[in-house]
Amino acid sequence: MIDVPLWPETPPGPATGESPSLTLYAADGPATGAVVVCPGGGYSRLAGHEGADVARWLVTLGIDAYVLAYRVAGDEPGREPLHPAPLYDLRQAVRVVRERGAGRVAVMGFSAGGHLAATFATAKDGDRADALILGYPVIDLIGWGTHSGSRRQLLGPDGTEEQATALSAHLNVTAETPPAFLWHTAADQGVPAANSLLFADALGRAGTPYELHVFPEGKHGLGLAQGGDLAASAWPGLCATWLAAQGFGKTSDQP
Image (cartoon, rainbow, N blue to C red; front, top):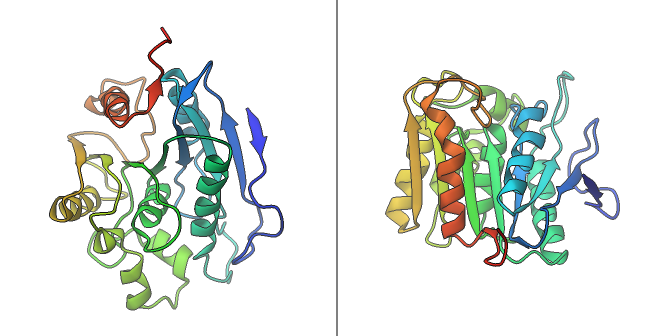
């Protein structure tokens, strides 16, 4: 692990208890591309198993993985709305990774981290990723499948429908949105699979390539989904194949 400087000075946007940071898990030998990983946690905290564990898996594919500890709100009552601090952090992380010489850069996010990744990928300004990987993402902040905790942390209790609409990623998809790999479980009670379905539908209507897998069983927050007899345990292999097709992975002269 290597700590990579993220912000040269105090980061812009709302201050939180923890400073944002970026950690590199470097591939063994020449890497083809890099992935910035955004763990979930409802914008309250960061789930460790959706960060380091995922990065170690990406390294085995010959991909440099950067785990982003973006700013979260914690449980402190009365804190000011978090948005747009996490988006600033991810945008800066992608810039830093590109400046370090990465060729292609993908952004991967889980749950609320998936919302962050999707928001970044559909923003009308700033750097764009070359590929997008979303695991059981929060997408919609206005419909029946809304994750109320993520919306509250981002916008505060007084957040408006207009603000929530602007941060519902499926409403901002265009032909410039990068190709995406999405996976979810139909049994997810925390963030319904409708979120991934809405995003996939928007990608299809925009003509943006995507791959979507909805597995029948599995609770929210599975991470790599290993160690159990779940169909969802297939997602890392499916994603590895998809990433290779996008130009990420070991170079041709590696075993």
